[in-house]
Image 1 (cartoon, rainbow, N blue to C red):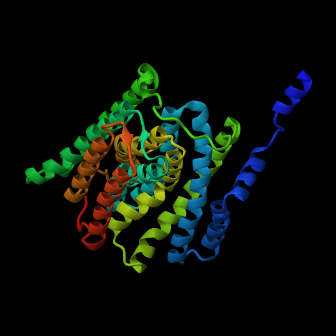
Image 2: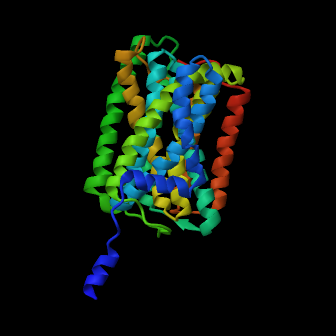
Amino acid sequence: MRKFEETSTIAPPRSAIGTVLAEVRRSPLFTLIVFVPVVFLFEQVFPEAHTWLFVLSIAAIVPLAALLSRATESVAAKTGDAVGGLLNATLGNLTELVISLAALQAGQYLLVKASIAGAIVTNTLFMLGGAFLIGGLKHHLQEFNRVNARFQASLLFLATIAILVPSLISEVDRTPAVAFSQKLSLGLAILLIAVYGLGMLFSLRTHRELFASAGHADVDEAPWSLPVGTVVLTVVTLLVAMVSEIFVGSVQVAAQHLGMTPAFVGFIVVALVGGAAEMTSAFSAARANRLDLSVGIALGSAAQIALFVAPVLVLVSYFIGPEPMSLQFWPGAVAMMLIATMAASLLSNGGHAAWYAGVMALAVYAIFALTLFLLPPGTGQ
């Protein structure tokens, strides 16, 4: 009997490829994975068909984002929601980083800054609001760790202040030298990266007991093994980066053909496409009643963009850009980031969420999107 029990509890070995193929067959969304080789082939045959490349690259990122979500959930199940949220935010932000680096090298600083501001606003309003809405519709009322959410919101507020200062000085002082703005941005970039590193030390090492999950997850199916999840994370992240390069190369011309301005493209389109992987993970986690993971992904990703990605782009601009990039944003972008940060603080203050809180956050995001589409910012430095 003991021998039978031991053999019956051991699952047959399964390769990473077999596991992923089984997942693709189970979910119709994963059938869109065929667009990944299609977009690569189309880019080789019709490199000037920018509008089609734009559409195909978006269609290819969607299933990759879903696979990335599934793999991240499996890894998060082994590491905990705090580390899982940080891992998902880091991998998800690779898309924004690749897009921004390509635009930075081309000297399109308006697109870079619009994508940074848009990613912060999209994560704090659209992603967090969508998670509250989707999770609330299924579970009525959900709980999450208020300490973790307020910690991420505080980091985001600090970074927003650092972005506000160069922009505010440019408005108050009539003669700010370009060199001064660049030096100030360089110093702020180094400071923000240091603060972000210390924040990770605080949340993951010295005070990690404060960031334990508050909710109870609904586990519908067994997650992938840690090796399978890690392999899929690595491969899919590389594919997302490659597709993102095609997206960057086609987005500007396609936007002109579709009647969209560079500011709207950077603030809305690039932010939504770049954050597709994180959004899929956040929404899926909220539906599984793992709102701590959703909040960690949304606010953690926004804080990481503001405290790490944006400062890194400032540093990298000294090497690959036509000239150093500053942290000076146009007033409209600063105002939207401040409002989004305030909204995140209000939404995370209670430690619980219902579906209507998500509706209000999504409504604020819709106001921003409509404003940018109808009256986009005309300047940006």
